[in-house]
Image (tube, rainbow, N blue to C red):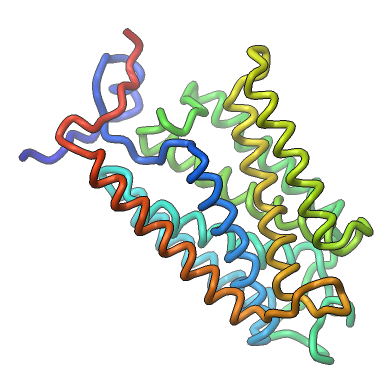
Length: 292
């Protein structure tokens, strides 16, 4: 069987061609895996930065490099592969966790654990605070969407098939996961809601978004991106709820134990998605992106 043809943005926009699908269908399973990946990203990021005391600075550099490696693998793939896709989602969640912490936190005792006086080598954090950090990230995300809009490429992920569109997609994912971490930490640490209260609030907003899907005037693409951002603070608050001490309202399961359990769950879900993909895939398993 010949290799699938690689189409440029111009090819996709101007012809009635079938092209290989690179990103998953948005189903209930998609959102379950997204929440599992973002929760694991929270606990794993905290494991490296805080439990292992590598610090936000070193951990951010290391996890960002991991993100770049996983992204290259995903971009070079010719079709949708659940393991490639969800590994990038996980790497953006882990990197987003420590990027957010490095931006928003500082070396004060309230951000350190086990009586530590410092974390790792280099600056302990910029200390911008959650509101300022979130404002910067929202502005950056809006810039990405503005550039995306100017290219004329689709925002609907099932129709993203070109290199440029996928690169913009992953840039938006990285920033949105970092923004979601800031929002989740703010809800858990500064809003007074606590971990469970923050998770319930985000879940309520997500339920409203599900209801808005039936409103024709509200584009589903807009709802998708709002939900994508909000599932990150849901994962952040859930991760904190699992790992933080009982005195702070958490379950005190620890970052290592929680990360191991969540990793097993996510790998199991990726394996299930891979089996389902193989069952439904075939020589004609392609997505129509042209306009008839």
